[in-house]
Image 1 (tube, rainbow, N blue to C red):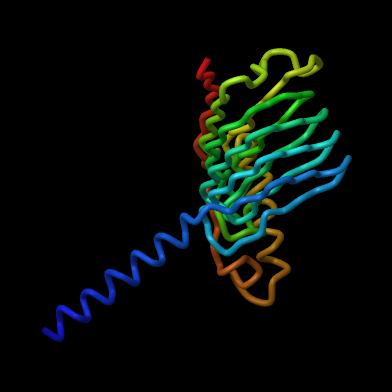
Image 2: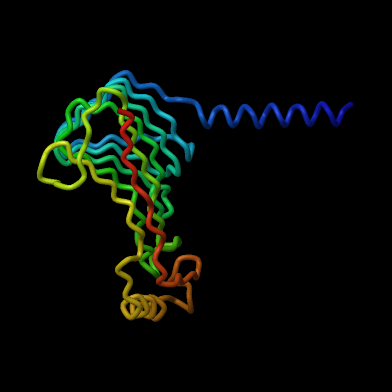
Length: 211
């Protein structure tokens, strides 16, 4: 009987944690001014967010740091020129974005979910993977185009892999220099780790229209 009670407690606790991780954050209106930046800060690696109205002025940015997965629903969006939505898990990997949006004005929007470079000898994470980005257009939305970045209604998903421009000779020279200048051995490197020059994996970008 006692073991059943303990088991039931842990099941309820696990369900509570799962429910908290998937709790939807609701924002009635989010306006980001010209060249301004807004960072969504939370401890969870997964974010589920509903924004009734999103207004992003020219060169503004909406960032998600330390996030593996971002599910974003936007009821009404006005996007200026060269606006950016950026996401990373903090370990060189791009975030996975699942975005449902109703664009009513769109200059150019860049969704950045690329893998970052490892910079051998200076960081403790390998070359990162690009994220998986899916943008689903709701009924009545402007249909973005992906071919001409100088025209309006442009959207681009950067899901490139990290470490694409790896130069083995340069990396080795940097590592040797760090070792020589360190007090002893590999202490000059983060946790004594040296990563290979293997690039990460490229992500995917999907633009889906329900109309």
